[in-house]
Image 1 (tube, helix red, strand yellow):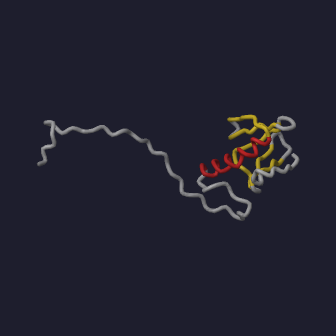
Image 2 (cartoon, rainbow, N blue to C red; image 1 turned 180 degrees about the horizontal axis):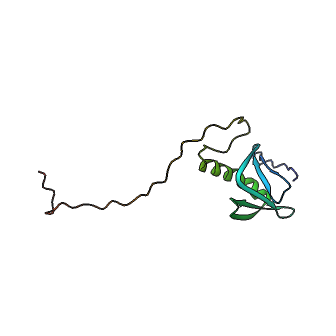
Image 3 (cartoon, rainbow, N blue to C red; image 1 turned 120 degrees about the horizontal axis):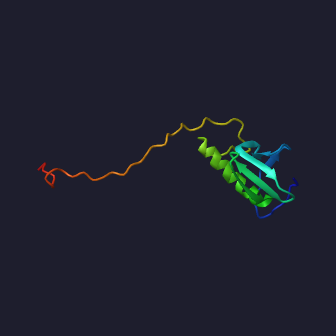
Length: 118
């Protein structure tokens, strides 16, 4: 893939390693887990998340979207964000939080109608 200059955009740190049947997606030198890229021609790429959900984007759209996806995946894995270019070693992830079922509370009435504690 050719690099390009965009004066009004921040520097993009997205790279695709390969070739294989898919390309690994790399942001800031770190592979984005669960994300694959499948080139679809000159200026299109199919991004596949967790080998289940895919969408086709222009390369420019993908370069804007991928850092957000990388951060979202890192957060879901317990990290604060996807590692930056200066990160040498991954910090320990945050402790896992188990999902909790939330039920609605129903008001309880006291026998006899009113509260008779007075």
